[in-house]
Image 1 (cartoon, rainbow, N blue to C red):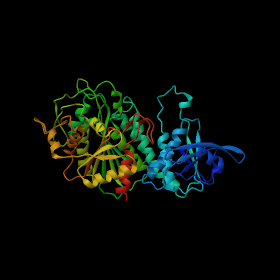
Image 2: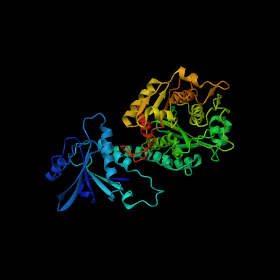
Image 3: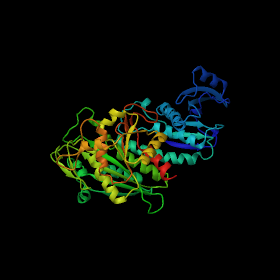
Image 4: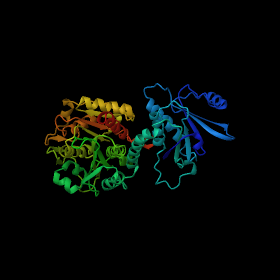
Length: 487
């Protein structure tokens, strides 16, 4: 979607003219017919509420829309403004209109607030219809342009930052939406590398031969049942002082997960194309950071594999040796994400010595049982890091909920024949998964694990997304960088 800025409403082309209205604050300069119509329709400016009317202006009939942004003093003001913008896109994206105009002339909204409206509008308008060949005309996305008239000084700069964030979210949604015959480890690298070209990010890729030389037996054990070779993709962004240690974001990138020999049920297995949502979020976050020239040093690492059940696949009961030297008894081949992450994290620590590590993974179904589709779980060995990420989640809308770690849970993954086993009992499955990853984190290195299994895909539309890929993870990482690495 294109965002255009024009000085005044008279410079905009035809199409609906939209005013953002705070709750119980109908602009007095509106025509009486609009005001009376809004009141008759019980429009009060609640978040996401819309009213549409027609009035005579300058000898023509104008289509005027009021979009509610809620209480101007609400704590969640940013989210409310995004929802106002999203409501506009939800109504007009497939309405047949190719352009709408937001009129801020005389408005008290700040540049930051206008940018929030635009961010919500752009995110909600995103569609991925490239495989649809028989869409009905009234279902096709036609909205291409949002014009912004009379915006306050500084809006274009504010939007430049949020536009970069939108680019990152949209890349993540695209990667998560693509089927597994299109996105697999090699094509993930190619797709993301092409998007990062010219941004200043340095890309480094490890192939399966290099990983074998490094001793990544856990990650390669997952990949050995697939004809698709594994990859590790590293994306380095140096926006701060040279030599300053980076923060590392590490993503699980299982581009399709059958469960391996511990085969998943057939029903719903098609959803496992988005088991690379953690890696997708890391890639999207890195694009956003680079496009807005974040003043921070950050490295994004994606561990990319496909988990398939052929004759070469690892078996339950196999023992593999991780890059760290720790041996792992593979009890369940469907607990593969932690095997990918443990080697990716070990390599990240040895290669970059990061100040902190945040990993993201669609790791456990148990997390969906615990938190549903409202929060991702956060596990951490560092109170300060956890608090900063929780704050970033609240501010960005990518919400997190703190989950426990502890020695009693850790004992549940001791193996009788190896250093560790990859699953514990049914109880506390998300916690023992996090405990597994923690065993591969260097002592005294701040680390957080985000289990995003319930968040990367939505079965129904949300505030700023259509049904399908949400882009979850990009915004919380970007906000963490803004608030803690750039401040």
